[in-house]
Length: 437
Image 1 (cartoon, rainbow, N blue to C red):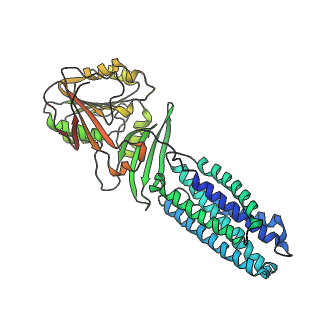
Image 2 (cartoon, rainbow, N blue to C red):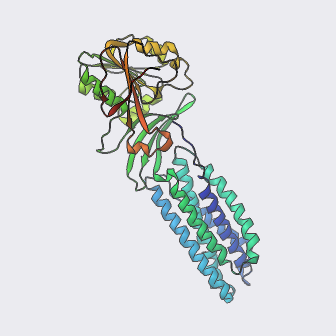
Image 3 (spheres, one colour):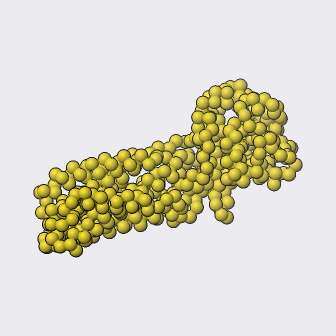
């Protein structure tokens, strides 16, 4: 699972910066040569423009669930301000006496310089907030393109302003570009909702983070826990019920097996399996092996797992190098569940053939081994020839599908057992293939 900045993510900010520079230069050109008075001072015009831009940035919406809606309102204000500036500039061009009066100069300063720059500042500030709250990208995809767009706007305006019939034509072109920038921004995948980072902690060379994803309306959509680029846990808000792949596999296989007394979860530090499994079979013993303490802590704080290092009662939680903690738990277990997302790509021990065989050895003669929600981690994973095995798939929930390339389109379970035929379905997972390479 990977994430990347959209190739056109920079374009809206560049166009907004271009429009800002055009409005600023048109205002300077109109006011500086409008007639006698204070507004012929370049310093005053630039100071008002800079202050208006700063005020727009200062008052831009911060992190909140309805950020996208607030950004839309700022964009509408921007379109309205450029429309007003275009109309006033056109009126100024045809009634030149307007520029010679104090009232006309004051209105020019407000409508040509202050209002467009304030609106643009609000748009850029909201774009920056959205970029900072997204899981991919950063504010640099706003600040850099906006500055380059401003430079382009100054150059284009300087080249065409002396040749145009009316400065209003340049403001009208900016109005069209600003509208186009809004269309482009609204079409980007990130604009489908807002991401708020609830918690973030470093874990080795990676980052463990909890994100709340919202719909454009501000309604909560899904809460997710990522370790680096790997999805470790998700949950839906409110009354919406959807089981994780591990819960589905565990409860389904527990119901089909009568002799299971113990379950081993490898990478279950944020899993909902313990609570679900004990509801299914209160006498069950559960051992959880986890590589990252941060995953355990954030899972407890934000997903109510209730897990603590060392465990409690029938649940034993052990954090450390997976190969070492696995060696301390010989089993056997009626069900062994391995979260492939818990294996860091750089963790050589977790991907070794020795680790693979150690996991297989923990499965009881009448038990099950489940790997998910993706393919086995590496070519060293070998299922014994005598075992039965099958692959099961299901689509990811629609709420997770909104995360785009950060999650796969389907969840995959690899189920193996040293005995008996495997079921045609595991909960909502349906049998996909059954073959050996």
